[in-house]
Image (cartoon, rainbow, N blue to C red; front, side, top):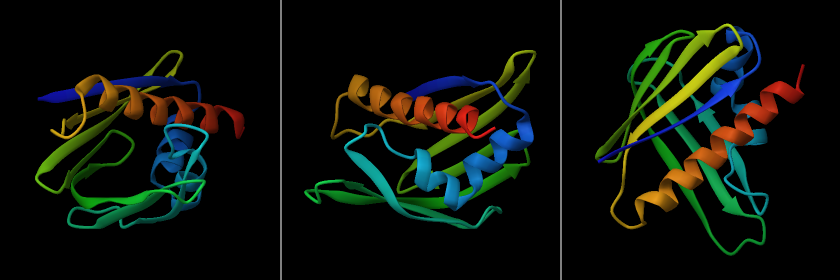
Length: 135
């Protein structure tokens, strides 16, 4: 099953793309709630390149690595990636009001679909806020 989330980011495509693919920016926005944060991020933005983000609860109670490999890159338009036995795509769609960032990914089986959708949507909303606030 695929899950899709999206957010409109009111900023130029170059800024949106950069914030999505730059480790220093990822550290600022990559969390589903205020009690989580990303402590490390690496990006090798090319087909076959690896990415990784270390996500941790701020109280130190839990953490995990979200990591995978880029399978296709179309600059400022699309990122395809694989993580474990799952795949995902992030699309950057320019419009009159900004850039719609749409993330589609394979659901996992450990957590309910709605919980996964909520978490990924929360991260994308935080991404939009980060980009729009850093003008």
